[in-house]
Image (cartoon, rainbow, N blue to C red):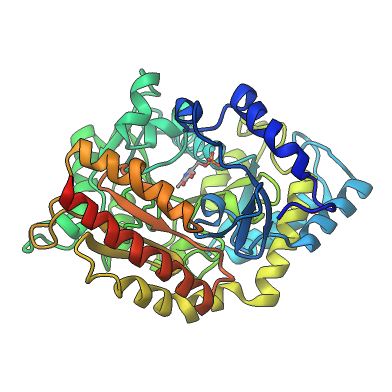
Length: 462
Ligand SMILES: Cc1ncc(COP(=O)(O)O)c(C=O)c1O
C-alpha cells in the first residue's frame, strides 16, 4: 500500500488516473480500452510482488516482462547506482572507456561460453538485435561475401520493434503497419511440435532452416537469429539436438548463428546464458532485460573473437553505436545484479526448483481448457485449447473473449500478473522472478485453477 515513505501518495491516485489517460502513451496497449476503465497503476514492488496504487498486492508472475529476475526492491542495486553517480555519472563509450563498462564486459565475457569475448553495449533488446543484424552484414562485407545480407528467423518469434529487428520478428500483426521493413528477413518454422503430425522427424524444424538458406541462396544469407527457447507462441523449447543441427547448417553455409537471449539469459533457464542450457556455441549473443534485472535499461551484443576480428586492426571499425550504450549507472546496476546472482546462486535455485514449478503447471492438465504445458527453467506457458483430444484452438471471437475479455482481467483481479497472449496459438505465459519458491508456485496454482476452470465453463455457455 502507498505509504508516507513511498513516492506515490494516496492523494495523488485520482489525478494519476486522469493524467495517465491524458498523457501517457502505453506501449502495445489499446488505449481506447481505458476510456471507461481504470489504468492499472503499479506503485510499489518488493521481492516477487507488486502493489497497485490502491494497495492491492499481485504476484509478478512475469518478472515485469521477463526482466526482474533478481526480484524487486533490491536497494543494494540502487546503492551501487548512487555510488556510480557520485563517482562518474556519465561518459559515452564512443571513443572512451570507463571502469564499470570495462569490468562488466570482462565479467560477461567470462560467463559467456567459448570465445564470446567482445561485448558491445546497447540500451535494450531491440538495439542489441539491430546491432547483431548490422554486425552480421558488416562481417560478411569485410570477409569477402558482400552479397550475404539476409537473415533467417522463425515464425511467431519476437525479436524487437526497430525496423531491422522487426524484420526478424515473425508476427504479422506487428509488422503490417510499418511495411516495407528492412529487406532480407526470411522466416522458417518454429519448434512448436504440439500440433505436428506424430511421425514428423524431430529435427524437421532445424532442417527447414537449411531449406530456406538453400532456397534463398547461401551466398545471400548472413545470419540465423533464434532464441534458445522461443517466447512468443508460448515458451517453445527446442527439440533435442536442434541447435547442434542448426550449428552444423550454419557452418556448412558460412552463416552466423545469433542467439537472441534478451529473455533466455541471466538465469531464466537456470544458466547465465540460454545456449549453455542447450549446449551450443553461437557466434553472436544478444541480451538485455535481466542483465540489470531491469534496475536500469541496458542491453548487449556479445561477439566471438572471429566475428570481431575484421574490425580489430588498422583503420577498421564497426561504424555503429548508441549514445547510452554502456551507461556507467546501468553498468553499475548490472555488476550489483550479478553480485546478487552469485551470492544467492539464482541459477542453481532455478535448476533445483524448475521441476516443482513444472509439476504445479502439469497438475492443471485435468482442466479441459489446458492443452499443452511447455517450457524450461522458470519460463513456461500453457497452451489453451477448445478440445484436448483434437488440440483445436478457438475462433477469433472466442479467442478475443477468452484472452482479453476474461483471462487478463480475471487473473489480475485475483492477484496474478501473467500474460494471456495470442501471438500464435492462445497461451498463458509464466516467468516468475528467480527468487520464487514453493509458496509462490502454490499462489500461482491457486489463481490459475479456478480461473481456467471458470473460463472453460463460461466458454461452454457462450
Ligand atoms: C527475444 C527478444 N528479442 C528482442 C526483444 C526486444 O527487446 P526490447 O523490448 O528491450 O527492445 C525482446 C523483447 O521482449 C525479446 O523478447
